[in-house]
Image (cartoon, helix red, strand yellow):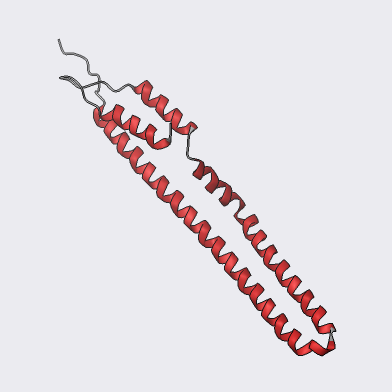
Length: 153
């Protein structure tokens, strides 16, 4: 079962009323549901934790790709310059390639940052929603609890 199904089951257990005095809440069932929720916590949370833990590696990889492109462009430019007939043309092409490499590097880093920000936003929204639902369920549970008091004789 998924996390939302488990939350729905928990909500049903906490809010379902039957009969004249209402149904008693099965605390053991609620605890079982909480344990099951922990077991099936969404995969996207684990992915977000992975991205968060490896964001430096991801950005470093993007930087390495861009540096390799720039290095290849510079090597190509040097090779073209060696051909004396094409010096001016080679300089212009090398500059264009290097500029394109820098542009692609900047664009790749920006896309990576945007993607990471979007993932973090989604995770934040999910966690805020889940936290609000848990707080609401706790408040409902507190309202449904009957304090045992000794019977006066």
